[in-house]
Length: 362
Image 1 (cartoon, one colour):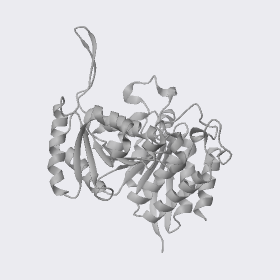
Image 2: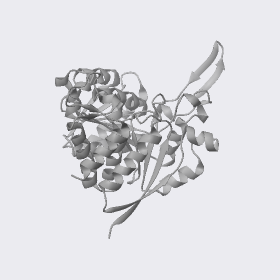
Image 3: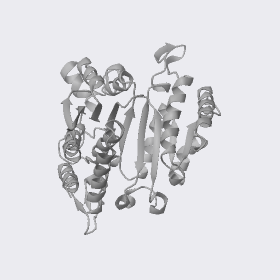
Image 4: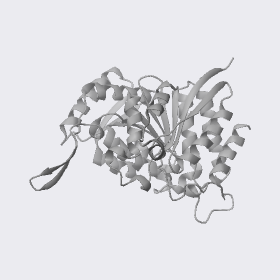
């Protein structure tokens, strides 16, 4: 008898509402051995329009009760004039905090047929496979006090960059465990030469390393890490860093692969529950036109199978199907050359999802 799994789907805003349903179609076909139950809810701008809040209580309750959450994207210019505490992105931050999703996994893997789409020369990125592990619920994005106030010379803005030892230790252990299953190399990124909080980060990560003698640990300042990612990215295997640095470096790594439309992510709790989402934004300029690349969301669904549902076979089937359609020359607009060669064909988002489903059946 097949087992059941409860998945909450949060399409969100812009192209999120297009790519999330395509990923659901793929999930249903990729893993018939699991009885997938999908529940839809609102988050972000669409939730503001309908309920007056970016994260309704019902959405958070549904997410907490689910085995995993699949998210499209949130935000858009429609809500840019709202106060910071009421904007769509606060819905995403609220989900991360409410589910204690402290570990963000951002793979930057280059599919061979897309090597020419990278901003770097092909030899620098061919075979690229980096995993960035970002601490997600601490650091400067959540630190208190924060705000804008009147000072002697006018308004003054301030944020607090703070980490507790336990927060650093638990994200470090996640990164070491993942590095142990890959090439056995971990780079911890900080700014320990000027920031006391990252001096503590380096000390704690170094202490945790004693429990993982099979993993080679190195440390790197964040400014150097950014430079090295565009100079020689294949030197990295797993990178672990704090919330703000991880936010920046993962977007840098994303462009090495040619398009944000290709990159998935997973945000995990201490258990198996996780939130899975594409790295790209809501792209309101192309929303509703069936132009959005669904592959990042489809690959996020593969991560969902691997990390939350203990179904690595299904994850592998999805990843192989994505590779197959790219090998066959199918491209959405974001990964298609301006003058495509004869073996490359531009397709719409729904057509790309159709092709992945067909490849699953081969």
